Each structure stands twice: as structure tokens, then as C-alpha cells.
Image (cartoon, rainbow over all chains, first blue to last red; front, side, top):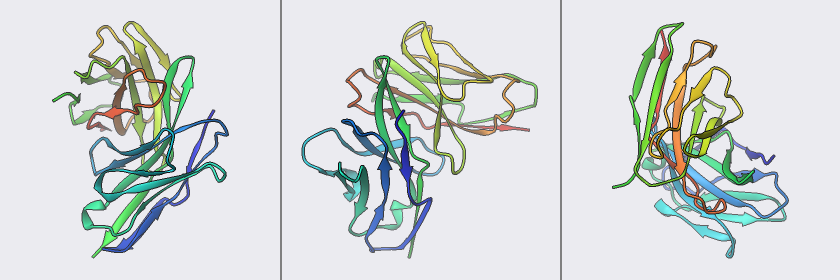
Length: 115
Length: 114
């Protein structure tokens, strides 16, 4: 079974500073990778996904992620954060088991933006 | 607009009671999922269903039950056998696509045992 490790449980940054949220996955085969954002007491919203092709993936709200196969990483970045980016971020990898798609999630990274 | 509706948003349960969480989708998705979220533990899969009248246990199914009588609906019952039911519960759905689509999530139900 695949696993996902988010290396930081909490990341505090100042407003307008750059941020990187780190994610490593375990699979050595072709993977589909996702980043989701969760605002307090809400469901998860898709930020971006990597399926194939260009290793740099752009998503909503100015976020982007880079797929690195050799390092089995899929780090999320934003060059300048805003207070509204305060949320929890989840990295996930898709696996197919007996024909069923399942997303395996990391533990999440809580991003806190300080003014 | 299509989406997933979870109800209620907040639910309080007395110890020893069963409660049912509702999940309805109008996305015409075949697959539906229930996850439990606890602080610092990410999302853990409870049950999932690929088609009507069929469902499989996830990683933490003990103390939970589900049904899938209609494509649009996938209710979750938290039984009295669940030792620590206080958590945030998320329902999700997806369409077959070899794993490329990802999930659409509902807004969640926060269950508290009082």
C-alpha cells in the first residue's frame, strides 16, 4: 500500500513571504498526486493535481507544485502568501485496489499566516 | 450546481445511541467514500462504495455501518460499538477514471458525544 508523509505538521510564515509545504510518497510506480486545502470546519477543496507530463503543476489561488520522481516528492509552493491562505493542506496519492480508486492522505500541514 | 451535501453540520449524541450521518450527491458519481478526521491524524477511510448495493470496509470500519441503496446516497451510521466517535466526518465521491479525477468532498459533519 502507498503512503504519504507530510514533513511538517505546522508551518508559520509572515504575510507576503514565500512558503513551501513538503510531501513525500512511497510508491515507486506511476502515481497520481493531489494537494487539497481545508478551511476550518469545511470539506477539502482540490488545489492541484499531477497526472503526467510537465513536472511543474499550477493550481488555484497562486499555488504550484513540483513532481520529483527521483526524490518521490511533490512539494507545494506559493511565492507570496496572504492571510486568507491560512488553512490545513493535505497531500494525497491515488491508488487503484481491485478496480477501486482510493486516495491515501498525509497527516496534513497547518499553514498559519502572520501579519 | 452539482455537489455533495452532508447533514447535519453538527450532531450531538449520547453515549449508547446510534446516529446516522447523511451524504447526498448530484454529480452522478459512481464511487462514494466516508472518512474520519481527527486532529493530527489526517483522513482515515471508514467505508467506500463503487456501485449501488455494494460497499467495502476501509481501514477503520469497526463500529460503523453503511448502505448504498441509491446512487446518490451513502449514509453512515455510527453505532454504540464505536468507542470514540467524536470526530469530523467527511463524505466524498468520484467518477471512474483510473484514479485521475480525485475526489469531491462534502462540507463535513462534526459529531460530538455528550
